[in-house]
Length: 146
Length: 114
Image 1 (cartoon, rainbow over the protein chains, first blue to last red):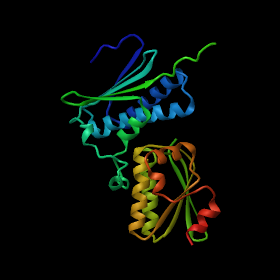
Image 2 (image 1 turned 135 degrees about the vertical axis):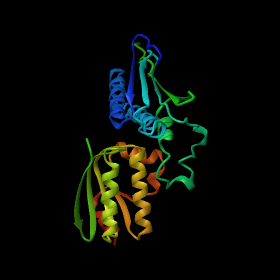
Image 3 (image 1 turned 90 degrees about the vertical axis):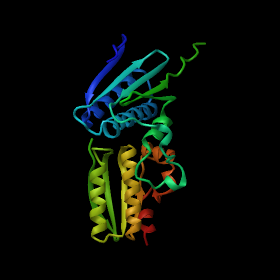
Image 4 (image 1 turned 90 degrees about the horizontal axis):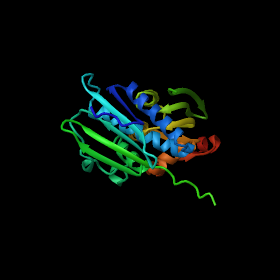
């Protein structure tokens, strides 16, 4: 496991919905501490939750032998969240566009779309086994004091 | 907060008053079971009152879509009432706002089933 840098919070969690709740709560706190307003906090927290669900459900498939690792950092310029699973791997390019007319009535396939909608940067890295998704949300520049 | 569902009848329309979150593990399954139960009993007009739903995730969106398509296949109409801003924003983002019949007031929603 990576050694966390100072100011970087890192968890290794079981593959359960309780872990999703824990990751969601940490994201909410990070956004609140960063001064996000309610709308920004909602989108940020939703994106992190969707990434955590993907790791637990689609990545590790609730396997108790597999862990989900989540790290949270406020770099001063952005909030950076990385979530790793130990699953079979995810190719984001193979996920159908949920906005395409033929996919609009599908019951699944909107999680990555929501993540991309609410974040400024989204990166995937294959870990063999597993996937790491890194979410970046820029902090608003400080208001001009003049 | 988990999802609670209360059912009532208004002029032949089954109104489900939803309260809480519709998410994987919290509300999706309850919603699915409630709607399947109504459809299996032959209910043809279902209105989901979403006024107290403050959060929906991709799983919850999937349940809404599945409920809509299941209903349609069984000859039942499913419509939405009183979306909160957050739910409305997510439905617009995912283009599902164009799929559902959505109403702001209950009387208009009930009348639309006739």
